[in-house]
Image 1 (cartoon, rainbow, N blue to C red):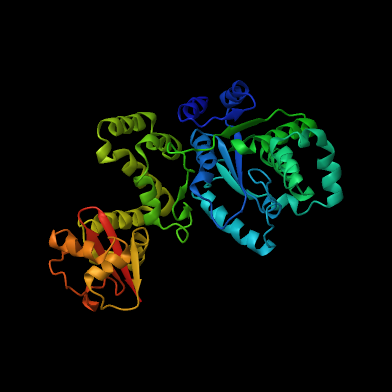
Image 2 (cartoon, rainbow, N blue to C red):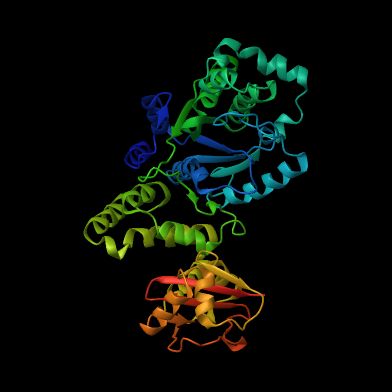
Length: 420
């Protein structure tokens, strides 16, 4: 079981560790129980949240037990990490709703068929029953304030907008989670993002103080993109796991459009392919970048993992049909609408506008005269049918699913029209 650490190192997934040699020795003795926590700061996780979750899944696949934790309690408080101002507290009902949604998302990546393989928990299960007096006596007693004040995030906040006692106490709650999981499940490894290092090591120290046990911490790096932009962000915002927030089509396209400079890194993080398979794809990127084999491999694998094979088939069909390689008529309204939401789109009240007006209205071309030129040059299409008449006016019979039309200029520029 020790090769999991070598695999993580090759994938670039080890940022910090309390003691890799000690962890390697623990893994050699037999399965360890590892956990990673996810707070409900939104109704969905996004792809950046998945780096530690995929790492937890890799530990599980290597024969260890995985615990996925959702922050039913910590989500009510808010982690000050990564923020310059106080986090707004969400209503209890909203947090509970988000916990339920995130729990389902985490469960998708773990094998929970047997408690010996994996379990899901909420830290509200043990935190809700704690009185303030018990919490201060049994937990707070073991946290030196001078050490807490020395944390970078605390020092930064105190030098700026300040920090409430609520957020200051977050570290105690997370440390208590680790201790509870140690007591209940024998958990000896906490995983998290590198921005969580202070909170995680505080839990390691807390367990040493109250239980006399030595446990482990391991963090994964924050992911950056080669072009300097924030990972997991698009022009429309974060790439969410919830299909209502990021459609399966947009999710697929995000990975398909990944920069050649980033795709091998993304494969190492988000693919469960073997090292040999990834190295073959890396070779393809170098030798045949135009084929985008690595991007397609990750897009298909990840979309299937998150949304299922049926949804993947729909988005692949849509991707091909938009560019004239399949039937637009066979796409369902949801998939077609999601696909057109990712391209220049004109929204009109009713049919009746000339084709060149629609081209300009969508933003696919800069003007009506540019649209006329596209028609003259033979590069204008409606629903993959070439338009040869500059005066052509689409009718209700041209609507796909009674609402949409697909515009195309040349082979690669796509736009759309939504009526109604």
